[in-house]
Image 1 (cartoon, rainbow, N blue to C red):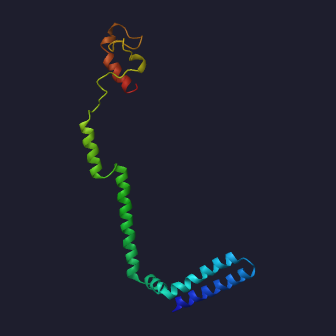
Image 2: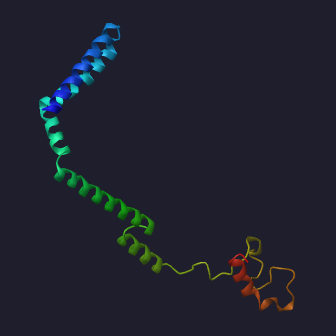
Image 3: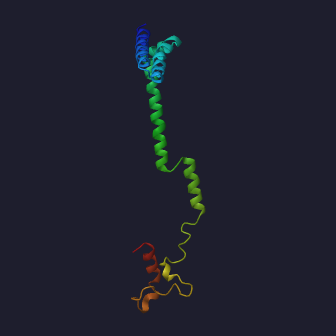
Length: 151
């Protein structure tokens, strides 16, 4: 009963403001204000206000909103964790299976030398630095490993 009275008073005030606006020759704005002013009366007539008042003061309705909030929070948390892990369990298994099928290090069979040392006429056992002496043949694979790791 009180909600209906308040909505009627708001509509009457809005229609009064629309009349003053129309008196000032601003008919488009007056029509817009009148449209907004008629919304509360329409809600009262459809029964939406009674439903909203009953929902607002119902502890069961607020508990329902709380349950919906918890469900939303759980949903968003699981999505965040899923994204950080790299997808769903099914997607991670598929990625692991693909990785196992491929070679562990397909390019590791060739020594990791700088691009200038990979000329076709040059042998890979040859030392790449001028500072190596006669024992360079023994340390070429160690040198390749160190270059591979950027040392």
